[in-house]
Image (cartoon, rainbow over all chains, first blue to last red; front, side, top):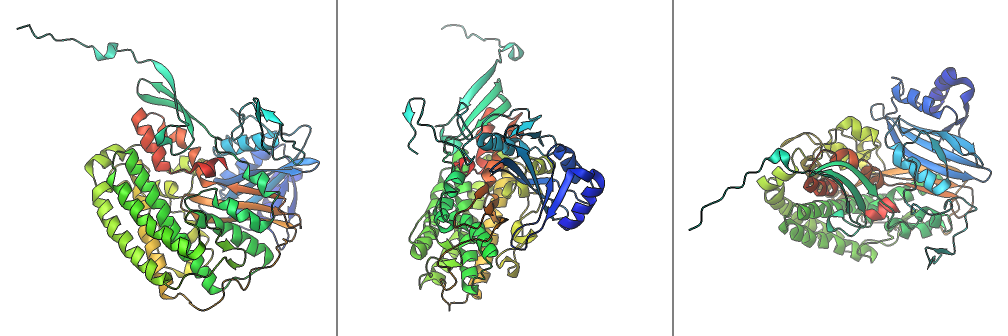
Length: 158
Length: 383
């Protein structure tokens, strides 16, 4: 199934939640959605027989200057098609529903996005840092991140 | 002569406390700096929490401050035992965005070297797994053979482990004159050793007893956890990107995808994961043989290498079948010579997240086997 067909189908079911279909010749096509009901949209994409997106390949966080972005790369084992979903949350309240109950692989991916960007996935059972030390301060992949001078009395060499 | 005494033990009366044990980060069987927090009931694993990040160097932040070709050496260091495979999706993605066609010769060398590196990776995986289970000899045999593959890479690229060989639009250097003979000889020896290892290790009664029916991962849970590579195929799902979405010139070659079928135990146990890796080595040998037959020896491997790389605005997700699973790079460009964002889909990271699911309910000694069968590289988990 092509992304534009999936877009039409999603528009029928979710209406205003689905914002736009972005097509660009030199890059991947993606569907832009609002963050509030992302878990319902993903559950629909997983369970509907026309899509069967049973595989979350990648979940990445982005820094879009004023906002934070979250990108979902989906894949269907059976129908062998892919889809990219993109959503945005404001930097001062980066909240959106967690997808742990849709795909279990979202657990570690969401913890990484929280660790690196400070995105708060509501409903995640264990949203703690994963790659940085548990008591690290700041979100390293944000563009305005300042490296700390020292950590536990040791100088940070970068 | 004293009278013989018998001590009565009522086994159900023995204390079996619940306890929390920390394994690693310096434990020899964690294959690197990984800490496992294990909750035990007697000797049974009831819960497991992996603590990762000891090797974290924030590759993604570094990548934002480097030009596109400068990132390639860092990509070598993600999964440092299959560096050739790591470079492939990255350069393919950039070539797609820049609209560069690479020559036939370059594609052939890339496929041959990727498959050779896949063999080297699986040799390490099975060798160290054998070491975990107490078999020392296969380790020596496989490391002796792997040396030949590393020598071929060294002659071509100058590096033994970290190559920086696949460049955008071509290769760093042409292959050496005795390339074909070296590889033919290497494959002959790899096959001889594999025939020996099959009887020595994989069909060994002790090995089967330790690995069959241990660490079973059912297919639906594997998919939900996003597991890819030999672990997913051992659970019975024949997903291989080389066949499912052929890239480079893989559709020209005839090869099979081995899947686990529970020959000695249950589908998706530790033995299945190892036999899948073992059979993939033979499939890689088949691909290399076919590629060597039609290998075009004429041509310049650097004719399409651009002087300066400046990507158009846009984004791409490029992926390839790494020895450990689906390795993907999500590259976002804003039109400068440095990327706006590079996100890595590291197969080891995702596969490791399914470890608690695989090991719950097994003995503590089995945990070492289960972790070994996942075949992780911490350089890629922590990035």
